[in-house]
Length: 109
Image 1: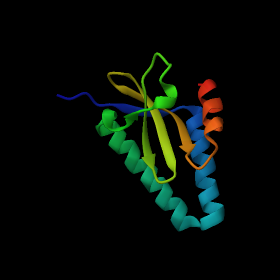
Image 2: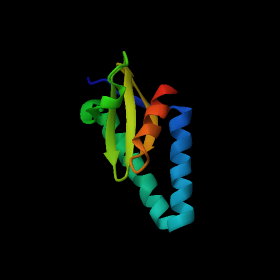
Image 3: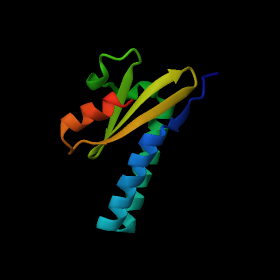
Image 4: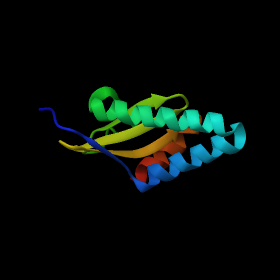
């Protein structure tokens, strides 16, 4: 029997998701916000079912843990496989932002 993975979102990643959802809601309306949430839920399931689906994230190359990322639209879901049954999403990154800001975010993880 295959191991079942659980996905948890770090508080910071959850906050980033909430901000993105709120932005979608206020700028584009309920339908677009719901579509964004559905995509995040679908990607959560994709990662859960195949944890190695994301590419190894080069921005985290100097870390002892291996970080992976999956891109959904303008957003990058950055996660790590913690152990045989746990995946942690550490960042939800808007790829339209300045890459230097990503470096700052990485230092805080």
